[in-house]
Image (cartoon, rainbow over all chains, first blue to last red; front, side, top):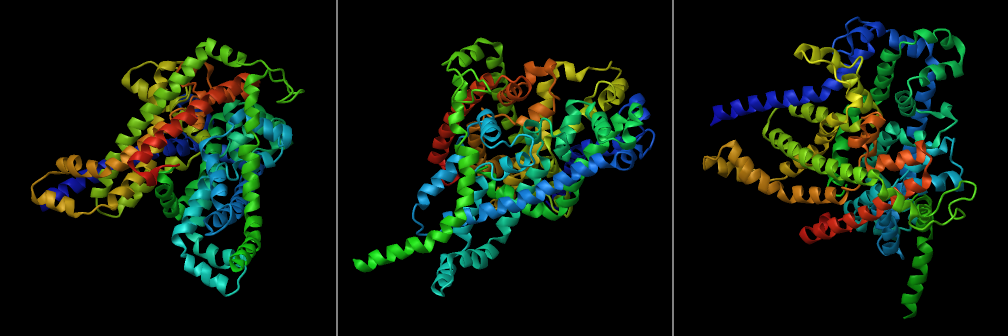
Length: 299
Length: 308
């Protein structure tokens, strides 16, 4: 029996190693391509080992045309940080109130938030609302606002955390001690809800970092507001964009337009688009997994 | 009596700060989720930007008649449902197999496997589009330059040949989604009582038998629940996947266009807002009915898992 177990364990590990390698292969191809000489890619194609090693794509991105990527990165980071802070600041008190025992109208508020999860106006009415009523087209807010809460899912997730993981007695005790509702929330409930806040913050951050759709839909003329993902999307839609952007921003970029190492640069930019996620991933993975299991069945 | 009354009064006043704190969130949902709803009516109008949503001429069901008179309505509905069905089946089977295997393994590498297979889930669909492009690009893709020559097959123009795309999209979706499903099944599996397996082993049941007679039956409620909830969302496609991975290539629309991409192209690329809204409303209504239906069934089986 024991020997049998060892053989099983061995085979299992081999199988999982194969699965893991297969999962990571596309990333390896991406990284290898970004370090391959542009002409070599044109001749031999993208490969898992650079046929001719070159850091030219990254030099082009950071030295020759540093402004493009720096600008896009700046917008991505600003957007992600602002988005997470605002989302949490809005979500937490709403969820707290929804979990508050004895709050008048509580049931109605829960229903109001819940309904946002099962139907929505869809893309066209939302677009018309934001552009015609609020004038979000071609503004930074168009990247920020539509993704703040999107729907009630995280609010309800946090509400059930408040309701189940924070004993009502503690909140009542604080209330008897004369603490105001605002103080109870900020000094008693929020510190106890840190785990769920961290989990939701990670999901929100990933969502903001990865978003390209709002930029695609709402930014028509203000291409200078493009985040890294929006820029990647624009390049994908139109390979010429990178050259146009370089020309628009001006400087040395315009000089070498004919030699834009577009095939390699494309991959180098995609590497820059995933890099922050891959770097942060080990630190947030635990919370991310927890979020999946919490929201799993309901998500 | 008076005491109760007084208490109620102070209650209201006491909760005023709570309401105030909730206000931004409630206002947000109003703006983001409720305010656009009347705009649904644009599906019944011939939209004119100058006249606005409610000033544009009313055309009744003309947009819908036009939509369903074309092949498009049939194609996007078929694609959406068939892809989602394939995704549910393939991803569920793979996620269960990987989760069952992972739960049986010992050693530190387990965490490495888990991290790796979850990684694709965190990547934006634009970047997934780039990754697929590196493999499939007609001129410089890895497949055409390295794999096919090695096999002695002439290069394939992947982005103009629709027949390959069902396989490509199902594969990409599995690559991206199996890790996510696996986490949920693994969490369910680790909650199980190991004694079932121990007694099965004493009775001489092998791994295969244990999987069939213990693991699967124990996972059954989770599988049913997740599948039902996915069926509830079968009318909604993963927009990013269907837009980015086929790179918005018109030649591929017969096998890659889904309701969500159709609505998007109508709005952003063709500027046909009314038509796009009609397709969007069609999706919302059928989708809503399916969500409700799935929830009624889920509620019958396990009230805790139901959304409503």
